[in-house]
Image (tube, rainbow, N blue to C red):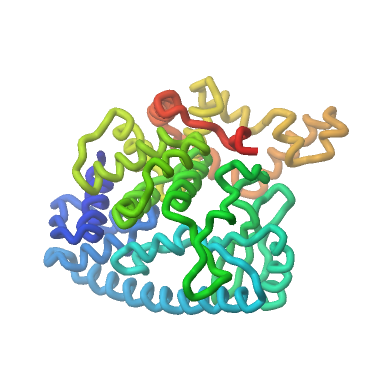
Length: 391
């Protein structure tokens, strides 16, 4: 493990377990450390730990205190806005299930430490369109939506980004599948329209969400820490056999076991296995939820047999007909136009400025990570998205 990432994990461990903060390595670049911690969405945990060290440069201490004060304020404002939103939805008779970070952040020593890029909520499918109209009338703006997307993205000044889900997968699933959660939800003691998942469903969904990112563009340290802290806080009240059944439904038990074990390696000092070493190796290079470079590595490992970057790049530039038809429906009726749409795709990349980013990402793509991911795919029996067996 690289020194910088190793030290970030030790800082997180000191905060979450109340242990002494380890002194800074003598050759540590503090600015680079905070930049990496920010990419991993662990900035505020690390800054809180570092504030207690006497050797911390005063300029950093001053900045960290300002960061903490700002985040604490923003957390309070955001918390009030979210609760007000839930109260308004409840008053209209709309059922709401907050997802993911809304519940995990309460497990951290201070909620501001666990940032959220957006607020995710699940609503009943039959209420979905009515809720969208209600939120739009309240001044929220719709950013994106579509028939094949399982949620809409809305924004407001008070809430920020709201992901409004009407189901938890890309496609509808049967009543026997994991994601038909409404009959199993727990109703709030204070609001009959506010729900939460049981611990087993929540943790299984967390693993599903992490894995969706992992095979899309990558998932780093924080999702593993989130899984560890959830087990640490709720594991004693959890039916682990039931959790295993939920993970089996998702075909993710082996992946989850590796994630849970790696969390215990980092936080509790357990011994590595070969697979936790491999998972650690790739996750430490992926930020919080990946990058274009890690996306290339994952795609080469899980979808393509060739190790050639050139061959992979050509497939990105000239995708197969089925891929292009999904994005250009006219090709379903006129597949002969495929070469024309390839040319359009290349020009769009060139003139949108994406070509430089793609070129840099291909240059940073690691063949070693590709091979490591291929071994993990075989060892952990990693499924591909979408899980057709769940449809």
